[in-house]
Length: 114
Length: 109
Image (cartoon, chains in turn blue, green):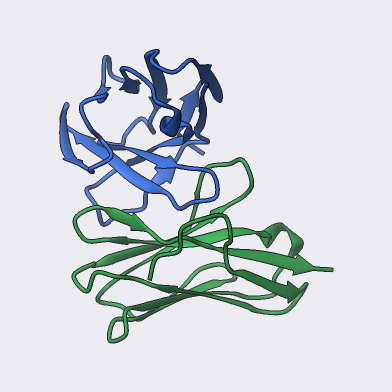
């Protein structure tokens, strides 16, 4: 069964450093998403991406964040200058259609900012 | 309302019993809803979805009920098994997906 994959599974970084989280969505999906889940809290929407551009973004997704689909398979989330409060699980998800279709999540990347 | 922090509501059920997990959603314009299962250290796993033009949908051992009048969603799991132990949360879609805080289901032997 096709699945969303994410690398690395765990990223440790120093405050102020840049990190890039990588995702490979399901191959025939067209809509891509990044979510964040701080330990013990609910999943929070960051950004949605379609047709090589951002569709929607939340208040969390400020200028420190950017997304990119550098080739036909990868979807990346970059945090330019990490802060302690960026420590969380970051999930990538993809869907075949917009909104009202089932959304499949990757296993997540645990980001720890020291 | 929202629940923020480390303490999730917990539902404990005996193995073999039915489980009912509830979710209150916030946006009356939401037209699509999903239930997810999240095991420790893993990403959310799609269980079942329902559109706002329906009030009930059944899957394998799971049923989702939607009451738009009171903005309430429930997930029923029949014959609960130890492997069902996880955090379950709902997501609503209006303009974007918004997730509920979740309920921890513990299945007792």
